[in-house]
Length: 125
Image 1 (tube, one colour):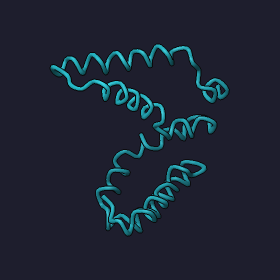
Image 2 (image 1 turned 180 degrees about the vertical axis):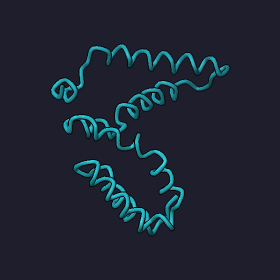
Image 3 (image 1 turned 180 degrees about the horizontal axis):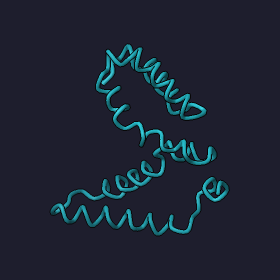
Image 4 (image 1 turned 120 degrees about the horizontal axis):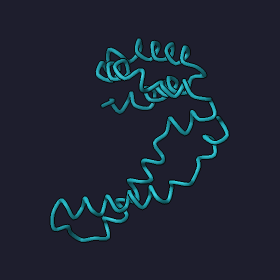
C-alpha cells in the first residue's frame, strides 16, 4: 500500500514504465522509479522486478495492440456482468449454485464474443 501523500506521484511515475515507447525506455523508467520509490516501497519494487517479463510482454507485439493488451477492460466487463446477474438474486443455497450462475454468465459472454474480432488485432497481423 502507498501512503496517501505519495500515491499520486508514485503512480504517475510508475505509469511511465508501461507507457514507454520501447522496452529499453521502460527498463530505464523502472530504474528511475525504483531509485526514488524502491526504499519506501520495497515490496512493490520486488513485485515489478519479479514479474518484469510478464509485465513487459506486450512490447513484443505490434504497437497497435499495446493499449488493448495493457488494460483489463474485457476482464472488468465480465466481472461487472457477473455482479449484475448475481446481485438480483437474494441468496444462494450453496457454493455449487453460485458456481452454476457464474459459469452460465461467463459461458454466455464467451459465446457472445466468440465471433467478434477485436479491430486492432485483425488489423495488426
